Image (cartoon, rainbow, N blue to C red; front, side, top):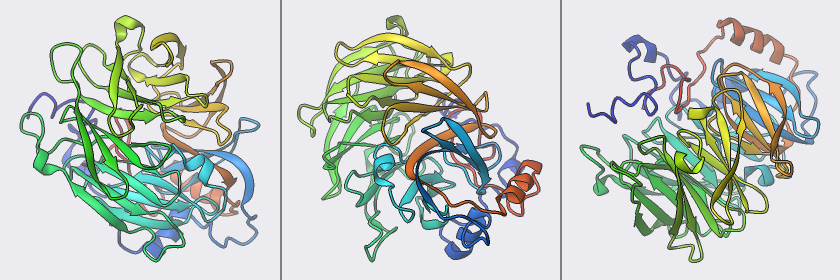
Length: 424
């Protein structure tokens, strides 16, 4: 193996015993979707005595420790309940999803097992399941709600476009794909390692950092094809390793995180021409950036970036106007992602090593409260609808906490110490 092949950050379970992967997926992603929906909801659908879904801003936090989801009231910043769903998601679609999910039948799109899953926000029942032949997947829904764009890293090295229009006859199906293995990758890699996806607010372009290709790839959504590929230079010796990215709401700026040497770096790109990104700056630890930047979110005014830097247990706040670090917010533990509430006033950050969510008030630029959730929270998204209550949920949760659920929770790929047994 190369040094990258044994990187404990990229492959947290590489040293697990062979038996740790047995039963890692509770079923084939494509098999038995009707039964899977019933199991995944632990009785949510049609439960006697359960209430109907309500229009209520809700944050969904996926706990990798026990296959549960914690529901947070984002108006009161209180935990509503934690529910067993026998799956977890580390990088759910959350760029436009909070504004699009205003009906109980709308889908939350999740990276689960070796593919992508859709869950109806009002019931948490399964709406779609797609196999990607990779265990490391990232996805985002387009702002027009018609498509989901997926980056499947190794061993697949593919881009997928899924039909996200619930009224379509091909809903939940792959409508186009791009095999990127012919590009190759650094060293003995079989492909460039597409490692995230973020979508321009006009819905025309998607941006993909290529971890093993040291490139930033621009995809057109329709037709689904590569339109531009930009070489990404490192700041010091060694590869640049771009791996995550976020487009600002105004479509003018792109942030890209890099897993390069000496603590990582953050590049800032202008999208004056959305089809041809141009790098305008690079921040490193010498500039005040936290350690090992992983993902980012951008504030509603597009002037402030929040970079999740789990290597130093904080969030680095960046002024995107002048490209400088303004402050770092202590989280008291490692956090890898975050999500905005539907009104985009607060940022919810699952702190995986503290079993809580830190809430950042955007106007104040500070952590204003912390909410206890389930074990090892990781991924998060939000919606304008809260799932219906379920009288059997408490029993399912108790069984999950005792580790005696009928089926082992389906894992999700994490960059960090969680989802034990997950396989690429």
